[in-house]
Length: 301
Ligand code: UTP
Image (cartoon, rainbow, N blue to C red; front, top):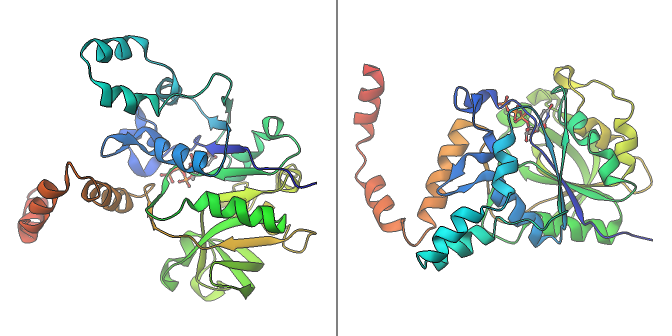
């Protein structure tokens, strides 16, 4: 019997070194796009895909993430007294039902595969989603919802994919594939961070997965891969020739790599421009930017 996908794992135990010194005290997932933390976008997408149980794989120094999902009675009382209904409504979206959210610790950052493995007891023997909050997708139908649908139809493992320029493939897991109906491909190989000349295609894997419990069994072997880390990609790749296979899902909307500085800044601008209350002022600012002045200022630092 095929089981519904109701659980999602959010691995947030990485050190976020690309955002040091900020990430010395602020978890990367709490950094905001306009006024909402990255994690909120990930939660909203998961909810749209039917996820009801949220499992966070955390590490030391991530308490503010747990606080973010806690209720804030004093703040709510004060907003109620001041009649700020819109803000109260906005706060409600961050609420999690008691028992809907669970935290497990990854004691050592041994890689994404290891982080997912840390959640194995909470996942149990059922299909599950994995969402990396630093990959933010703007616009279009929720990527994860399409992936859950593909899993429902095929029973297979599903990874989100997008075409990237050939010179960038070495930053991603990359799929080789045969069948391709335009939105879904069937994978024939999957390689983590290949050199451009070894890459099977330019179809890169980004941070959304719907996986079968067999992948957790594969992670049990704790095999090290690229960068000497326990790679999720390797554990998924083992299923390509398995019973259910691996599918790549293309998605609508624009993906921003908010784990990188340039991606994060681009997302900030895109999300700002999408807001009715900010668009005019922000576009005016961008239109009047003196780009050469920016370079001069940088040279002075
Ligand atoms: P990244 O490769 O972006 O690593 O992890 P990072 O530590 O977050 O950031 P940098 O590269 O040092 O700047 C991708 C995702 O996997 C999680 C991260 O939290 C992020 O969501 N992760 C990675 C873990 O939970 N544990 C790990 O051991 C590694």
